[in-house]
Image 1: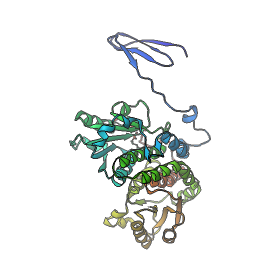
Image 2 (image 1 turned 90 degrees about the vertical axis):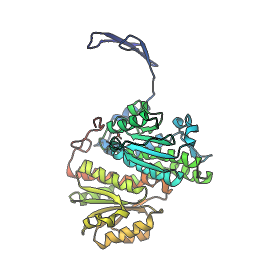
Image 3 (image 1 turned 120 degrees about the vertical axis):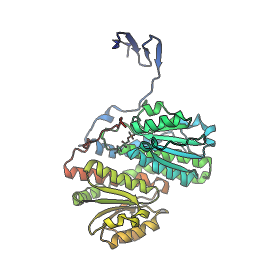
Image 4 (image 1 turned 90 degrees about the horizontal axis):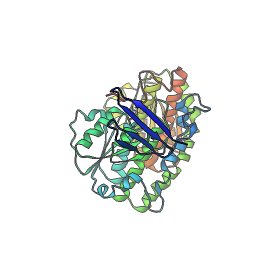
Length: 414
Ligand code: F6R
């Protein structure tokens, strides 16, 4: 490539100019001072933004998840130490040692990935962590302290509410990290360090592969903190092994698309759908409900199994579709209790559970099978059938799947 020179005139009549080459971009500002820009390499392939053999970008992006997860993980796992390697973090290792709290800031689907991250940090790193709706921060007058790490998560890196929360925290001196998919986005420029998720361009308004890639980024962060604090090398290696297998396991979940399609064809006219989980899968239940609302315009609620008897159980009536997330972990026993309550009221229950869990099988109408996995990675697996169910519901209803009404890919207004 040669040199590309451009010239333009500002509204005030000033001449500005710049020179672009394969390796640099030189511009001058309004005062004619030289301004050198940084070149960032974007790892997209030419067909990333091409719909290919798919009818919708959403389905393409759902199916791209194994590849996106592999890309997100590349070079970031340390199988020997049983830990993760995150370039951005390394420059702040000394400060990370003094971190005593983590606060995630995000909106929508990214907020749900943040909730998974907070759960992982609490459980495995024994580090107090919360996920805050970034849009609510402005009314909270947040207390910022030097021992808290703030982590803003945004696929686009341009969500106004998330950026505004981030700016408020930075202005008060807080240490801010970013997790984003878009290289060079405002979020990546305005944080102290960050993690790119490298999911590739997400074109459908409805976020799918960014969610799993963001969850993966929080897994890597939690693993790093866990190894700095409480987790043994042996347990760290188990987690690393689980992450190494995750893309193949997501592939197994995708193979169950036909069952999700049949369920959607049966329930696409339901006046209400409930998604129930516990632990990290409360966030996945909320994400499943959000997908269904967003593209199939179907009323849905995602909630904790613990919250059911405090009100939402009143909504259950015979035949109502309920999705229950019952992975074989510490949440299973209590989820079995929820399944019994739901069955007694005649709900049609679809469980996402271990394929060989006979007890779950006996309580529900059908099971979408989870392969054996480490409990820390279950949200990356349980969400796949929920994405597929929302897709096939919207397809059956004939809606514009990639461009749902009233929504934009990037919400740049507050
Ligand atoms: C849902 C969805 C939205 C976004 C939210 C935040 O499928 O796409 O809820 O997750 O608007 O967007 P980002 O992640 O770009 O900050």
